[in-house]
Image (cartoon, rainbow, N blue to C red; front, side, top):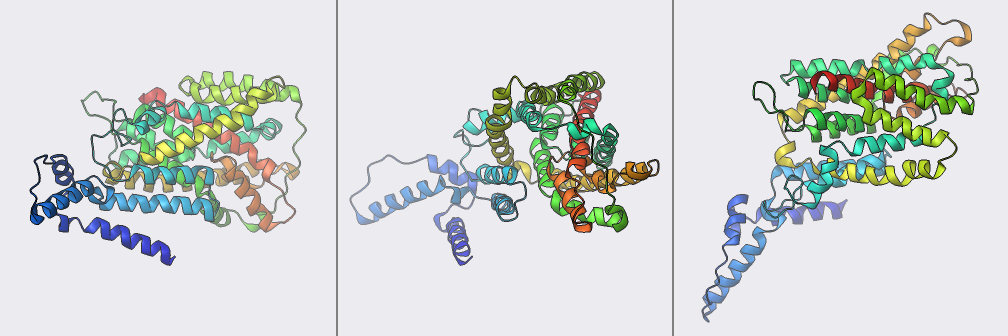
Length: 440
């Protein structure tokens, strides 16, 4: 800890020596640094000293220390916190570590115009960010998710799909909240999908609706909210183990938490192969705009269940999804450039995201209790699995399982919780497609 403090003190010293070098403003220092005199230096000691000082001053003006702002430092600290949470507490490390690193990369101070920043045309980061802006990465993520998902629990107990649908109340509650706070319709639609706790879907929808390019009928340019929305969605996905357990204990009695569900029936391989085809047709006919997401999800699952394309399925669920996750995490993190990210809108989006996640979780829990009013005997469901209706796969299902074990160490809920969990993925994609149909 002492070494970390020492490093920060040294960095702070390098940043705050700008006045001593006459570099009080970032822009003037960068611009003045380009005008280097090439006249011959006099042999006198004063001239040599003056020339050396100018050289040091020019060099310093191009460093990050000369161009750092308080916003850059705040975002770098946030990036370090993300990495710390991913390593220390195992909060979605596959997401938080790439995103945290990206936040640091995006906030290293630089001189504008050198094709360095993620928003500068022609820079390497800008090319990688193209996959986010155009919505290329999310469908590839869904392909990998489909190839690693077993829909057996959902096929065995289809009524649990209702819990995934109930959790989508967070999407529409957030949409209304965003409208109330002054966001226009496309922006509110993109913000609303945070309530589904599905990062790829949030990126896909915001790339279509809130990309800073679309123009409304009255001439208003829609804001670029991809960065704040993506960071909010992934942050709350990572915080599932923190947010959901208190809500479970608050809304579900200890007696209900001990409810044992009967084992799901065995699902045949033929059913597993038929399901992705039927689900693809049904969901995309309901919401055609969600075709890029749902199409790739069920295609990936068909690769897995067909029994004939194991090589393709293995590539989709391992190498491909890993590569895309790295690119997506780093570029989304880098998009949080301080001068663009630290705004009132970002704070509002984070606040709405927290509220929406709570509403989605509560919606699933309460609807599970409501369903039990119509179920008898061993057909009753443990209301805890309603919390798995959000799309954070498989973390939400794991949290439900661990919470159930705390009440009854022999009550295993993981398989049951996976049904609403995977249906939540489908539900959030359908919700995104519906919003896109109306507002796109």
